[in-house]
Length: 269
Image (tube, rainbow, N blue to C red; front, side, top):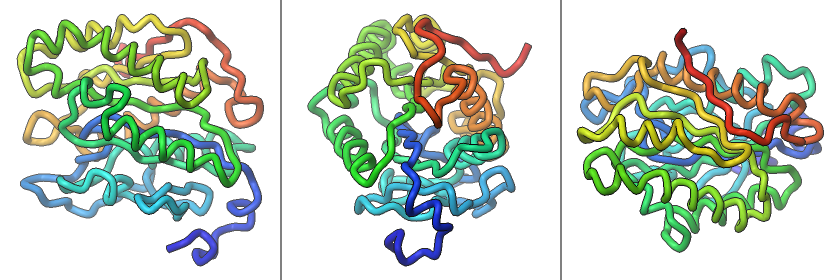
């Protein structure tokens, strides 16, 4: 349904959107509440829809956002709750002048970091969707990135992860013409193979300016021991929002980054 047909608050029509790109693999697209390829349909209060939270659909229309955010993007798997709605609701709760948050889902389950290199389909779709998102007014304020579980299978992939990740970030910033685009990545809570620690080391050691990190280690996992539960996704979304607000003290006004050095946020003492 097109935005004009949704009866949203007038602010949703007139204000420039504060655009957040959501990218990575399955834990970003959301498997909260998905067990045995069935989503339980439970949406916690922290993920409730709000007229001031929009989502760029697969057909490039802005619609009111609701979980599963990636239902028409990550189409080969069953999607459930991810961190995006909890993130957006936290921003609205903490920022009196937040305005409209525009979420741009781009995550694809099962993707290796090499599948996000410049020229690949996931990369090209991310750039295309991000470009469309700003056409109606608004600014890309940050990208939230949660990926790497697939890179824990091969020791070579794990060893090359840092190099590939940083190149991806630099290429994306160049193609979006935003050389200091804030990127908040998530350090893995789980993996598909034995090299989780190597990938986490790369994530926590990323040393690009304006790239910060939240650590998902210790968050509750579904029975598959790979995907975050719905409560864990809520906690992660709130952690990401807090990191975003800490990194950019007035992100929805000036967009000016506070820091130019990497930051690190861990959920537990």
